[in-house]
Image (tube, rainbow, N blue to C red; front, side, top):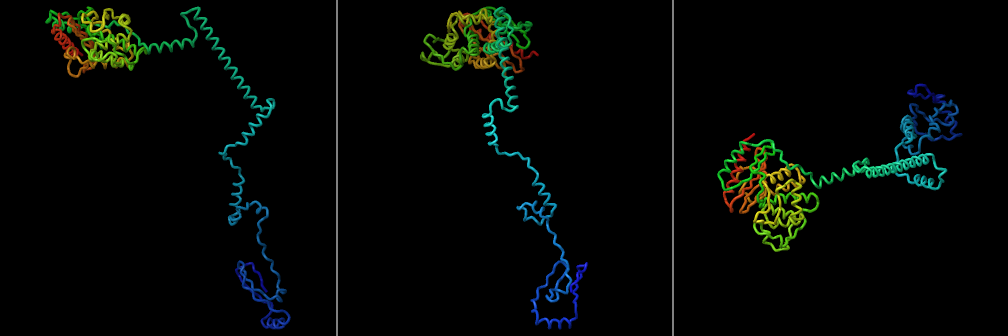
Length: 467
């Protein structure tokens, strides 16, 4: 007889009869019931069972078997089929995962929702205007209000323009239309850029440099046969020296300076371009300085090349070409007068051996001073203009009187009756001064060369040593 104890660690087998009784009963029963084969020992937890014969099983008290824990059917239904292989996990973990799976995912979908858009468009097109949603009505109202406001604004601008036009007709000097004022200011700005403002030609003369004038008078006194005209001005202080500065003399090739200014002013105004091709005609060919006279008529040069040759090698043929390209001598003379050059006149084309073209030292310095201050031409043209003047090949006059390191941009003039040089000099110490020396001489007198060099040297030494 098998007894079950509370302490399952104890194993006990209690037979119901003695061994002899058992054998006797066995022998008596063998004839009645055959023996069943021995079953192997089964171990369930800590209780061992020995299989007993069937005849004795009726004498045993049935031991209630422990009910096996069965998972509720509802819980099995909650577990998804695809998680059946994880049944060994604890119920807490499974419930947590089920809860996580049950939560809705708020991640936005990256795929475009074409079907709702098509449905929406189809519905919006199929429905009549009266059954449109409230939001559509609101949008239509806002768009209609915006359209109405835009129309009113256009109407107001039109009324303002009409009113300004009427006022401008009644009072030409007054313009109350802001739009027309803005347009006028823009046009005025464009005109100022195309045509730079003309500064007053009067040089800002502060005081006469008497000490330097005395030294220059000493140099001039050495050459009694010559009649020089000298005008000097310090651009930083306005100090000046004037010796016969307003006396008109033959301009020779110094007349090419105002022609150069007129050329770059025309470039700034768009009347001529630097790369425009100019044709040398037979009427342009002039003797004297320059190499264009040796070319065949019909040769073509750019406008910039022509202007450069006019200054650098003092080409007379190039000068005549530019005079014609700029409108002729009469047009240029009127332009010179508007600049305040009262004594600068072109009477004949180059070479003008008789000296009919005239100018004065003060006119030339006033002209260079205006360009230096940003007048007459644009700043870009001013820089190009002075670079051309720095390349003047004839350096036998003013450049001989300045020291090493100084920079000069100038133009010379040479006739039998006159020798001249005028330009702008930059010193190493940062000073800048303008100097023009025009000397009337009898029949190609070479003393005029020494006079100009002496005046240049004295001026350079004085301004270099002065603070």
